[in-house]
Amino acid sequence: DIMIVQNLRNFIETNNLSDNVSIVTNIPNSELKKYLSRAMIGLHTMSQEHFGIGVVEFMAAGVVPIANNSGGPKLDIVKSYNRQATGLLATTPKEYSEALTKLLSEKETVLKMQKAGRDYVIERFSDEAFDNTILHCFSLLKPVSYTHLTLPTKRIV
Image 1 (cartoon, one colour):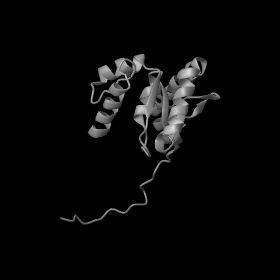
Image 2 (spheres, one colour):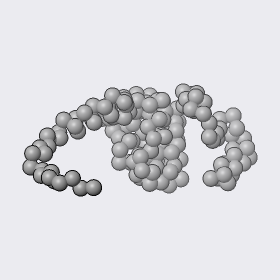
Image 3 (tube, helix red, strand yellow):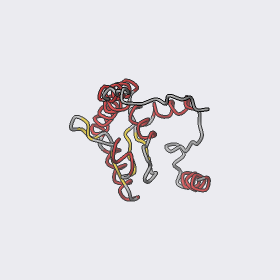
């Protein structure tokens, strides 16, 4: 991972992209929130991630994700909400490039995705949504009767 980050930093410097591209690692949550508040698009490239909390954080902050077309982001997170895409999925470098180009050239699309993404995350992944889902699951449980159990008559030591 360290070599990947260093190679990306070298690429950014060599191509004079430093004014527009930043790579930050291991930052406090407060600093992460500042970055997300200024971002428009978030790239998520991890393949087969089980869930994808980073993608959820993007969407909650109004950042449109371009996420790997696998695992949790594909199955549970980057979904259509009220007939509006909440982000884009990609696998190859070409697909990531095309998705990025699309979002950078279609401001109205980005605005719609930002709203749909925030609304979807609130409905699906907020504390209130989690509480309601757990309470619903508990309401489906049937009472268990223990009257059929026979307890030993002798104390076993």
